[in-house]
Image 1 (cartoon, helix red, strand yellow):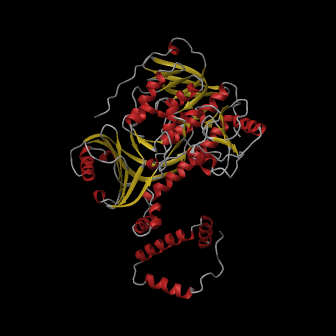
Image 2 (image 1 turned 45 degrees about the vertical axis):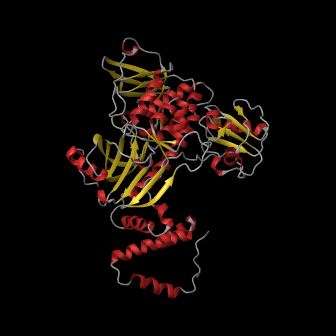
Amino acid sequence: MAYEYKPYNFVAPAGLTAPEDKKKVVIVGAGPIGLAMAIELANHGQPSVVLDDNNVVSVGSRAICWSKRSLEIFDRLGIAERALDKGVTWQIGRTFHRDKEVFSFDLQPDEGHKMPAFINLQQYYVEQFLIDRAQEIDLIDLRFQNKVVSLDQEPNGAILDIETPNGMYALEADYVLACDGARSPIRGMLGLEFEGEFFEERFLIADIEMEAEFPSERHFWFEPEFHAGQSALLHKQPDSIYRIDLQLGWDANPEHEMTPEVVIPRIEKVVGHSDFRLDWVSVYSFQCRRLQSFIHGRVIFVGDSAHIVSPFGARGGNGGLQDVDNLGWKLAAVLDGRADSRLLDSYDRERVYGADENIATSARSTKFMTPADGIERTFRDQVLNLADKAEFARSWVNSGRLSKPCTYPLDAPDNRRLPPSARPGTVAPDAPLAGDWLLSQLGRDMVLLALGRPAPDVGGCRVLSPGTNDAIRTRYLGAAEGAYYLIRPDQVVAARWVDAAVEEIKNAAASVWKGI
Amino acid sequence: MTLVTHPNLDEHDAFYAELLAAHRGLSDEESHALNARLVLILANHVGDLEALRAALELARK
């Protein structure tokens, strides 16, 4: 069934009649990133105004694959349950060459995590759930049909001119968060440009509605019979909607390719019948690019406005949510005076690092999927050729490496006797915990996790000292009999010790608030 | 692991002859493909990115 778009009401903002008080945070863009940002800030007690030039959720399914980490973030934002109920859960990906399976991956082979590896859920549902949640929160002032038309930076803030159906008004803010997407008008207003790589390739993307017994898996084809010489991708979404991506080549004319007379016969060849309804269609090319810096004065870029990647690793929307996760607690700490503004520099440093990893990984996949003629194609084709004959080559077949959070390069106390999967800079691995989950217990505070060790009083962090179980031992202790883990509000491991004096822990916690 | 550049294959003349023999009768395109497969197979056998990077560097000199 087709999604029913319900326009949200425009409410005339107070600023149209009299100047409004200076805001702490204005968020530009009510897509998944802007909305998540507002809720995350509210979770940390900070108010924000969210401006969107539109009054409906995403047209078309767009971002559909939400990773385990994104679901964990959604859980803190209060929409994970709805997302899981509605979404299609999956963890297996299969890659085919012609009609033969050459490689498969399981993104969550072990048990004991609250969240699954991935769900597929159309972006319009994610936005709808986030809007519903945001509208329950008093700290969030969500304004539809409020279009930012200019931005002036001041030493301690920025002034925005905003166009509404009832006229223009201005808002002043301590910080402006540009969550306005890949084509970011704010980026343009500041005269900033992306740097990076553009790929000369076009893909058709289509959502179709059909009744089918297709498994909840990701399927990718190199050179399938139904789409000779090119690549294809199939994902199952809720509401009997399937996402199909088809490689078209650089010479394809996007306008022509999007007409139903051209699209429908292509899809018929993929699914083998004509019993489907075309729900949405688009043609895209890929870029793997980013801003050199994500912070410019009092304007902070978050999500696609800061960095864009080719889509096959699901690293756009998920990468953006990791930005939100990283920035929320830092900006909140700066706004309430707990930390000075240098803490924000670590957002720039860490998320540039994360974006570079996503860009490098996505660019590698794109090169494999759409090799240039000549030696690039030779190597690609020979990997596929060998995948039939030798086990090693199967894992070289690259149809996209799916989003997982990066490990930040932290210069922090560590003990190599403890398992590498929970080393400083990584997101703390989840584990079952007496009828609950470790990540739920960590919440959004700075936490000292004391395992098999006495729980000391460390000012400024909550101490959690659960009993151990197999999952905790495997993921956090390894061969050690006990350990301390200092965990940041974004659930990233900040430091760890097999044993530590209170002073060492306090010093490490102080470093976290300084962003070093 | 550092890249081995001292003599390490005693039967090098035999391998050289077998390498040429493997290419005999192939078109340029088929030869390129064979070489590509060989690079991939040997890279996996070496199994060490540092050594492979040194090999790339030496080959590009």
